[in-house]
Each structure stands twice: as C-alpha cells, then as structure tokens.
Amino acid sequence: MEIEFNVNNCVKVKLTEVGLDILRQRHDFDANLAPRILGAFTPPPTDADGWSKFQLWELCNKFGEQMYNGGSVPFETTIRIITDRDKII
Image (cartoon, rainbow, N blue to C red; front, side, top):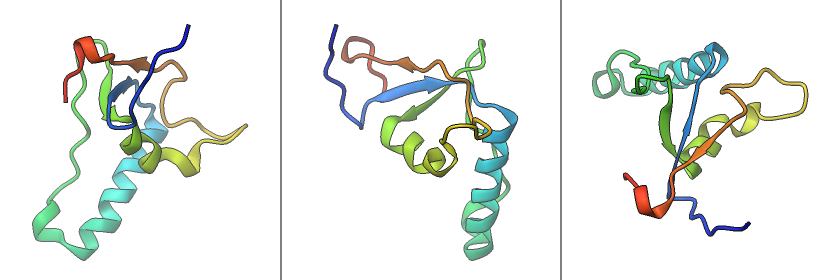
C-alpha cells in the first residue's frame, strides 16, 4: 500500500532520553544567542501514552545527524503517521 505524505504533515514519536538531551543541547546553544527570547528548556508536549508530535521536516531537521546505523536513537523506532483525515497542524 502506498499513501502520499507531505513533509509538512505531522508524525508522532516517543522520544528517548537521548532525544531529549539532543533537544536540550540545541536549545542551550540557541539560548546563548538569544537567552531572553528562548528562556528555559521545555520538553515537547506528550500525550498520555508518551507520543510527541512533529512535522516530518522538523523531526528530520532536529535529529537527522543522529540517525545512523548503530547510533543511539533519539526516539523509538515506531513512528505514527498522521494522515490527512486526522491531520492536526
């Protein structure tokens, strides 16, 4: 089965501690440039089952460098794809 999926559509992932550390480090780096604008690090919202929502391009941008064979994964390997019929952007 094939479906069309736009990189602007959303997916859900369960972040690992590695993923949270990556987000925290990126925030801290950016906060050095604009501390008053960014404030303290806040983890992304998660639902009751631990899923966080990202646009696909955003997920790739934030974690692309860490996604390689044998690396520590920033999120569990199952991804939920939000289709157009239940799209929430």
